[in-house]
Structures are given as C-alpha cells and as structure tokens.
Length: 429
Ligand code: AMP
Ligand code: GLY
Image (tube, rainbow, N blue to C red; front, side):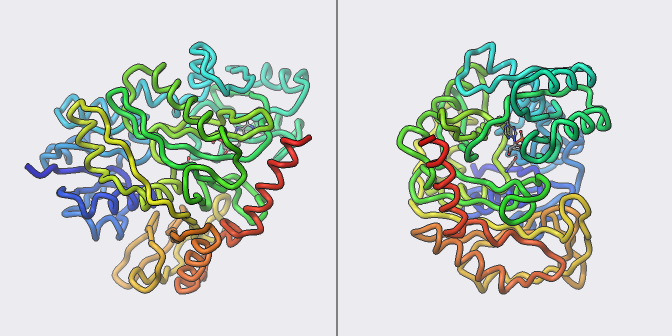
C-alpha cells in the first residue's frame, strides 16, 4: 500500500522535504499557513490552515487518511501536534511536545544538558526576574549571551560584546519583559550545524552545514532566521579539523540517549571554539536553510527513513552525494526589522542549474509576491563550494533583485577563507 504522507509547514525547508519525497512511492499532501507554490506543485492537495492549530491539522490528516506526518517547523511541535496526531492514529515523524522542549524551552535545554552531563554545555544561569538577570550581568566576569527561554524565530538572542554592550543588554532585558531568560557564557568561534535523523534508538547524522544568521554581508546587522548556508563535499567544513565533526556527533548521540525515546530530526547548533565544539542550541526539526543543503545531497530515499521510523525498525544507513552545496535566500528589503512586502518575484524554476525553493511568498493571479518573511532560496551543487556558489549566483541573476535583499558573500572563497583564518587564529593563540 502506498503511504499517504502529510507534510506540515510551508517554508523553504518544507519545499526541500517535499522535493525529497517527490520521486518516492508516496501520495504527498501538504498544509501550511501560506500557500507555497513549490510544494503545491508537488502535492496532490495543499490545504491552507494554521499549523499551530493542532485540531485543524489532525482533521486534515484524518480527511486524507494520512499514514505518516512529517512536521517541518517548530511552532506545531511546541503545540503538541505530534501527540495529537498519534492520539488519532497517525504516525508523526517529529518529537512529542515534551521532547520538543529541547528547542522550545532554552532554560530546560541547558538544565537538561547539565543534569545529564552532556558535553559541550557553556556556563549558564536561568532567571525569572529581570533585575536579578541584570545584576548577574554586572557581576559576571566576561561577556554573556542573553536568550529568552521561549521561541523567538532565532531573533531574540543578544550577545554582549558582539551585538550589544552590557548596558544595552540590560536595557533589552528590562524593556522586553520576557518571562524567563537564560544568560550564558559567550562562545567565540565559528558556528556549524549537525542534523540527525532519529528514531527507535538510531541516530543518523548528516554532513555539517554553516548557516549565516546576520542580515547583512560581513556578518553585520540583526539576527535573522538564516540568510543562507553552505556545506562541503564530505562531512566537514573547511574551517574544521579532524575530530571536530565526531565530537559534535558524540554530543548529538549523548543527547538522544538522554532524551529516551526521541524521534524526528535533532538539530545541533555548535560553536567551534578553541576548546572544540560547544552547543549553541538544539532544535527539534530540520534547519531552515540547512535542510536545503542536506536533503538535495541525501541519496538514501527519505521515505525509507520515514517508514523504518514508523515501523519501529532501525533507520537505514544514510548515504550522501559528496558534493558541496551553497544556499542563498532572497528576503524582502528591510528584513527582518522592517520588511517591505509586495514586491513581485521573478523566478524561473526551469532555466538554471540551481534548485529553487519557495518560502513565504504570496501567489496571486498575476504572479508571485513577497511577504514580510524570507521569500525564496536558490541552491547550487558542485564539486567545490566556489562552483556551487557560482551556480547559486547565476540563478539569482536570472531572478532579479527588485525589492529583495540577498547576502552575496555566502559561500564565496573570501568569506570561507575568513572562517578558516578565524579558527586558525583562535586555535593557535
Ligand atoms: P539561538 O536562537 O540560540 O540559535 O541563537 C541565535 C544566534 O545567537 C546563534 O546562532 C549565535 O550566533 C548566537 N548565540 C547564541 N548563543 C550564543 C552564545 N552562548 N555565545 C555566542 N553566540 C551565541
Ligand atoms: N537555521 C537556523 C534554524 O533553522 O533555526
């Protein structure tokens, strides 16, 4: 019997998931708050609904007789969509609400790491009281990262000594009135992501990816959901040394083991410091953009992973095409602080060597328009990062950039070399 897969979510990450299932023996259905034209073209049916409304998702899953659900974004995980789908008899590849706390509650995440002795945890303290947090900043010897405990779409963290001064950090805490705040040691180094496919005790990790959180070229400007990312042929990134990737994988494996019966994707965000990889955060889902680096080079059929997970079996070993990838997002001008929606997007899905992924766009009768979130991404694949970057740029040139902003530096030889030099400098100090 063909599986009926319900994909939940409508961003670039979910378009990548849809494409990875498009050639498999499945009937694909999708639901999201925004109609993603790329997913809609691949799916038998696309339902527009609020994916954080778990009843609406479960009703739709029942209507289409879904046999497997794949949850893309964190919002529905935080609402317990997996628990609800399971209660109605649909296998969901994603963690239950309690396990998703590894992402949705940063205070829980840090305490969990400390209690379970998981390596790579920075020094941290959690605060329910703004004034106590401000006092801690005054007394702490060194720079701190200020993190609201709940979900902020990657935009809530402020790092003292990097984006803000200690005084600005305290002002941020006092003004923003978060219920709970984590203050932790500022980690210095280069960031990388390791995503793992997890179920039934199996942990299968993907090659490392580097995302670019800052809005502007040269890593300036506010944090975003991620402006683009690259991966190299093989599992390592050019700034990593032997053993770094393995250390990160060990941390992911130790976390899965401590979580007991975790299933879905576990995403480890690491800072490679002079002392090796430290955990910046965990996410309970694929990264966006990182899914667009990983899934296009996954040679194993993602459906085989999903069905093994559902059937209670060991997950298949994963095989990856040993090519580099470069992903660049086009976002609306002014994103993320003052995004201007309504620009017409010109993309030509067929003409370029690159892969095109739609994210948050508004499909109207006369074309596709930007919203206030990331619009679309292009991904180049090649034997080197530099060649993959050229392919991505060629595709963007075709798309045009009216009303859009793109970080053209992502994946360039120059920027990659700066990452290598940065790590060499830190490690040889
Ligand atoms: P998060 O939402 O936890 O991913 O944080 C967003 C971004 O803030 C990360 O990608 C890092 O660039 C930065 N960040 C978070 N925690 C730290 C830390 N302890 N030290 C330095 N930078 C951090
Ligand atoms: N790329 C960062 C994230 O997905 O959270």
